[in-house]
Image (cartoon, rainbow, N blue to C red):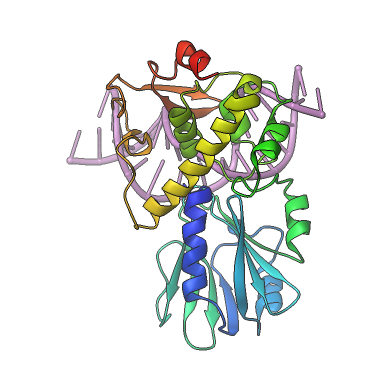
Length: 269
DNA sequence: AGGACGCCCTGTTCGC
DNA sequence: TGCGAACAGGGCGTCC
């Protein structure tokens, strides 16, 4: 489920494979993944262009071209990219294929069709249209507090709100809360104010960076991380207590009831 | 207006 | 053994 760290890895992949090659044509195999575009429109806008580089914002990947258009990619739950040097066949579940003049192709692969492919004239226009807050890794501690302090409701729900800050999804919201010893249903205010807020912001940065390195294969997840232990019936990697699984905000939420109980939350605050 | 919830979509898993 | 139901979840629309 591509969240901010996953999309960072996809960005590295796209930049390492698909830049500076002229687009011959765009093949849309399933229109359901198009975001405000038609197959013909997408082909017209990208045809003859080359990708110059990419800009990630939250879970979105925006690809700059040498024309007046950016390609926008969102990966939903099961989306990924697949570049092939010789594009004689297409990968399974390839929904959109950008074919280059050199015979290579970049495929947008998305089995469950929850991802989206579109275009935008500029990055700010796209962020405005999608109502996205600042990228979670490009905001300082003060901005983090300011975006969240007035919110009511659950801390986990607030961390996952893309209009407050962009990039955190279900898995890394749980990981941040686990590392910071907050309960998913804790109120937002006490968690983001003062020293506790700065600690939570630091934890958030650390989790997203650590996860990126793990997903990129440059290291593995630390033994103290929750993410590799999300399966049902697992125990807390820090204290051994049985992990809890509940729905919070409609999403499966995994946490340690001992370390992230109300007592732990109060100690942290 | 902000928060809660249902729905989209389909591969996988579970239960009878 | 086989088939259908439930589940997963990011984002969006809708409702309160």
